[in-house]
Length: 463
Image 1 (cartoon, rainbow, N blue to C red):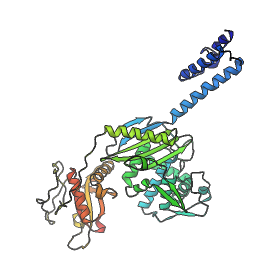
Image 2 (cartoon, rainbow, N blue to C red; image 1 turned 60 degrees about the vertical axis):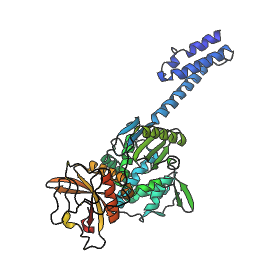
Image 3 (cartoon, rainbow, N blue to C red; image 1 turned 120 degrees about the vertical axis):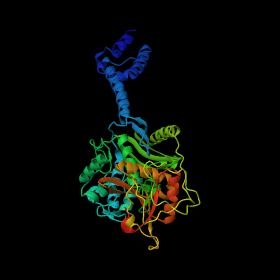
Image 4 (cartoon, rainbow, N blue to C red; image 1 turned 90 degrees about the vertical axis):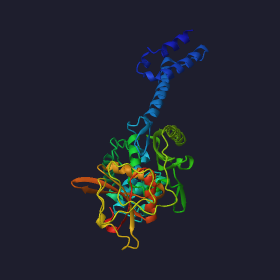
């Protein structure tokens, strides 16, 4: 009985050893108290008071720290791409370590330089001693070696190679430190308000932080700004020097509709994942931070995506009919005009080129358009509108690409700043199409209730 009283005294919440314990440890404390009291009644209480107190504090403290550490890593969000609507979120604005999700921004800036002509997919990227010295995961490149830009893209998407990420940073900005500053500036420009980058790879740095919401913003920007490069994120494997590297994003093989984007892991972050999935015309972007294992992270991602696919309304995307229209409209409808329910085939008349109808919808460079009669192989463009804000132009491009996915699915949208009077407007076109592709795209867009104009243009007049 005396031993039991000693145990009760030691385990009392009034004992000094427990005054500093957090309330969230009450359940853990209760279990330990019950167990030790039971042992004391059975005659197993042989430990001194000080040693027992230290053991209890350690056990409770360890349990609390483990619980809090796990909770501090987790965050998630699911958004619908076309509308930007948040369908699910947990701790979405809390700062977390991005780990190798950082490489999404590294690739964004590489794509930006390729599109601007400062790099090509065949450009060689040299490997410095600094880059070669990065810790795994890596390709184990040697100082003095080089890798093409396209090989570097595959290495980051699949193997998540840290040595390649640093080599890219040094190629584009001279040093990784300068490149990280550029990454942060770009993050702010894209609307990633809480993100700070300190390196190109995601290797541990206590000041490199992001949020689930910011990573969703980056995923949207990647698909929106570089649709021609986004296909790299669905790469299942990459061969380098006779060795095959599989993609760490297991959802590509396990979860129907997944076509990107990236995984990440360091001890401080747990297992992270950004994924894009499209089903029945609905595209969701999911972000999960802080998975305990890659499998549990994947299961959780699939669960929250499943739940949102059940909730969101499926968009019925009507495809173009097999019979292509024989004529196309040369000007979009007036602002406020009701869009046709379906594309007219027999009744549409081509307006005379000498008296083009002026519209409030867009300013057309009719004079610079190619004359099919004088150009045997004119280039065709599909024009979908003119917008006061760039973000609205981006959204319209996404919707148009979805409505005419067969033609425009991997065609980059060209946003060109034009003026009507003194008003700056963003014109959206899809360029470098064949005539039959332009006809098919406009048929699909009109069937979906979207404005469209197919234009035969000369190479110098494209915008």
